Image 1: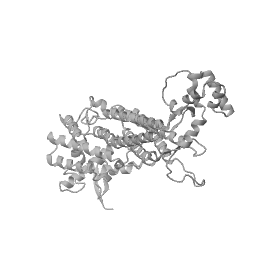
Image 2: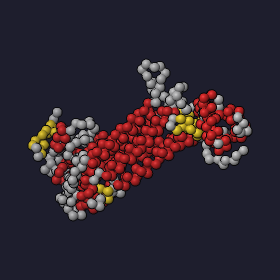
Image 3: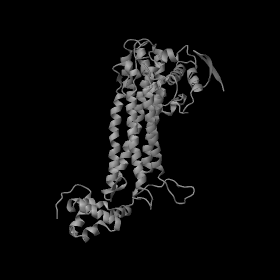
Image 4: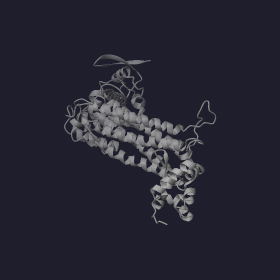
Length: 468
């Protein structure tokens, strides 16, 4: 492999000649091999990083602290990367020491070398345009990196929101499709009272829909950034007026309503918004997982379980049991939910681990948040397209469970009293007789009235009680 030699604080180091990154990125590659997940795995983070660098270059040019020729080359390089070019050069592992410095320098070096090319120079010829002196001017990792993370989370959340909305629509469609199918509802895995299968799916949809608003609420907190605070929030090495110009320009570039945090010292060490966002992801994962638990129960059997719905068969379910088909899609979503819940704990611990004016554990927070968003987005899309839309109702089984259930006795309580209803239920359970047969045998209600009360659709909503 052809190599070029670059120099930094620690001395000389060979870098692949064809690489757009430089020496500090190479050191990070040598040092950190934790997850095997590079920055490029999350395009939203790459885009956010270069947008921050573009806004900084623009502000520096406006203030006269960066020559226009250099600033324009940096901005052009950032625009090119933002459009998708050279993402494969963002190679540093997401989890790293140094509070994100390696990620920041990976971005600085790729941008610098692309800008050098635009100025007619070769890669590594930093005397003409330097990753630190020019691309990183008026910045520190400690303000550029968290600001980029705030943007990246918002960018990455857009596909997640779309996937959630599409999943909700699929559940609503099933709710309408199954609205005529009456079945038994269950509490604590025991027969409760009748409902429709449509109501069950409608409830799934509403339950998930609530979290879209929660995501929006927390995203507003991520619009408060510490760009301009540099090392610890005091703004050292940034010229007067830079903060307002850079943040304003970033809002234009990103399309997000980013504003300067009220106190940059506080904002440089506080991870509170990330903790809240992680909590919302966990909340959604819990709801998604619970729904998949229900789908697996409702489809269990298919002949010796509940068997009220039929999931679309995706693959053979056993290497030894012929004909077995497993609920593999809900199972995969369940596992996604467990991972997101676990990631929330990692975010919590990392946020608490910060000391004084900086949190060095922020890379772990970034990795877990972006990974959780990506996993949930994929899980929602998979669940919708490979499960929900293909679900069929087993109407005969729903009716069979309903007719055999003792739970319908609840509807008789206003007419025959709780004690009589309890006795009827107990006798039905022990004898195998139906509730209807026992009530008629004891003459507790006339047949016409009993049939009206026990009509499945009469038990689906509140009704005026008129004793016979």
